[in-house]
Figure 1 (cartoon, rainbow, N blue to C red):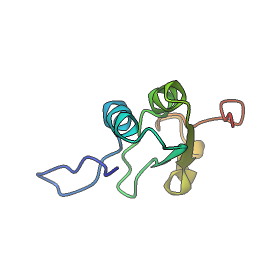
Figure 2 (figure 1 turned 45 degrees about the horizontal axis):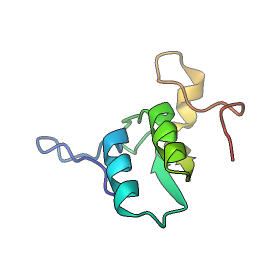
Figure 3 (figure 1 turned 120 degrees about the vertical axis):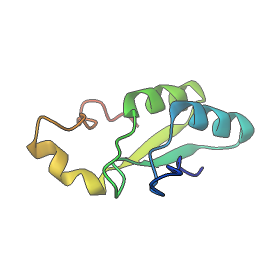
Length: 88
């Protein structure tokens, strides 16, 4: 799955729940999905909705938050999955 790309700015946004649902519907043998959020450009995905979509398809969702280390130090950033929300 490729992220949405802003045609004006040329930067990648996050994967949408609709795109994940479409990709998983087209790939019934998938066992998981990997999402990077936030992106290098700071775009944050709707991780909760992505998890709902992934779990509805019976697959695991792995979120790489490497670019989001700073988001835990401010209240202005979207929330990231807490340890309690991480289900395997």
